[in-house]
Length: 52
Image 1 (spheres, rainbow, N blue to C red):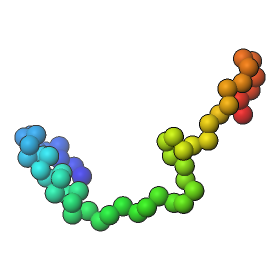
Image 2 (image 1 turned 180 degrees about the vertical axis):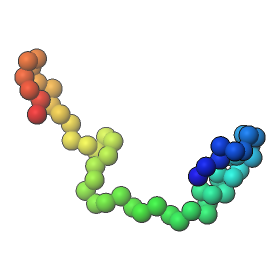
Image 3 (image 1 turned 90 degrees about the vertical axis):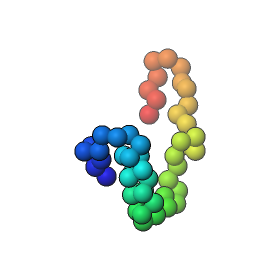
């Protein structure tokens, strides 16, 4: 949403919040898509070794 033409911070915030409320809900993330701390960790190997 483009709010660059609104200079007042409080008004811009209100417009954004209203737009966010009116927007349709976002789709759930696909099953099996790990994100954040659930991602697979890369093992720390000895120096000089290839990681992948």
